[in-house]
Image (tube, rainbow, N blue to C red; front, side, top):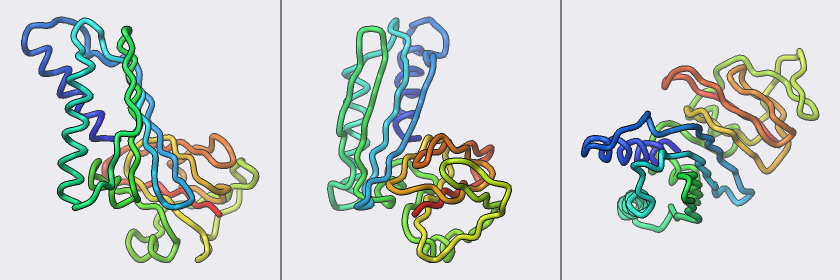
Amino acid sequence: MKKISQIILVLITAVMLVGCAGGNGVAEQGDSVQIIKDGSIIGTLVDVLDQSYYDSDELKTMIETEISETNTTLGTDAVILDDYECDDAGNVKVKVKYADSDAYTAFNGGTFYCGDAVTAKDTYGLNGNFLDVQDGKITTDDAVVSEDAKIVVLSENLNVIVPGKIVAITDNVEIIGKKSASVNIKSEEELAYIVYK
């Protein structure tokens, strides 16, 4: 959800430049992606804007414009604004639906792949220290990634929900539950892997 975070930052910066005072405008944020069985992705961004200088309508328009430009480039409506909420306290929740991981990458940049292990290995390699996960808990065993597994590969700190049971992760991922994990990478070059069946 890098793109929407950048749009919010641009809006805050632009309004601050015309004379509004305040802190950095972001009190907290939480980004997540949910992988659906059909390969589509729902991305959710939750943020808090300082109400002394946010403009909800302007923010929504900027997001819609970026989505429209991405869809024009892709030649299809692969990115859709699914939900947009902003209350009087500046609490913003944006939900965007992506047709697939290519659409997600086209809109947000960076690396994001969700698919079979063979393609992941050929495209990204299976680099990193893979840890075995059983019933939502990390074991001391090293994991072996089988060819029939599904993998999410990403370069962004997000909470990730998958449609199956997580069976392996790299050591820059924290298990939240049987189908959910939190990514904690420290550089743009670093990739995180979540393996599920």
